[in-house]
Image (cartoon, rainbow, N blue to C red; front, side, top):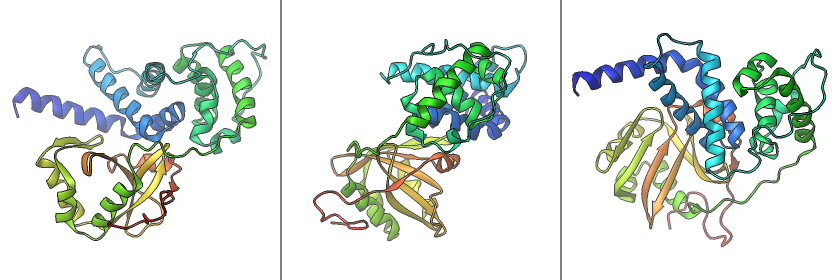
Length: 304
């Protein structure tokens, strides 16, 4: 590694250490804006990348919390628009007549709402409810993050809270980007500690993303399993964010510690996204046990 690259790496590590305590909160916000713990982490990663670059252009470090939330908000709105997500008009329904002097205690219902429920709201209402009710930001902080006024935030809260309470979101079937059979086979080999079998299942040009840590490709991916050989980790197939994923359970725990996303090209793994280094995702996720496929002959743990 060159001296310049080493210097940048050290600066990046120092920045990530500086913002470490804010990352779970940024994720709670981003995950509810997008309706997905995975897409929420994508927003967090992009936010931190933008912030790290911007710091090099600034004369001094700004107050981190409001600055990062502002970047995350704008990044999420751009993401929603670019991906054709519905209800993303950032000024929609913010014109109610409200009492500008009235207090706005948090609505406890929003804290318990599932991620997908927030998607019924226009993004202005969605953002206001998440920031104020879920994260406990003040009206002034919420307005600063959203780039609007306190009065507009109050209007968004009135409508957003009402719509959220009246909404009901049905669980959707997996999108089918990866099959249950493919994940069952990988999980069965992994749980049997058949590392030769796992490595044989991985394509020669497989891409590995250890989220927030490192990326590898090709032969280097095989080294990734060396750590798992020494750990007590069990994989189970779950439905997460509308698709099938692997939940990693550590030390026999009933609750997943983190998730792994696989993609296949034919019958071999073409990409792995391992979220072990961002465990706060598991706190925001609501995974459900994935039912066997309709054929009925593919059971969890099978290796057919």
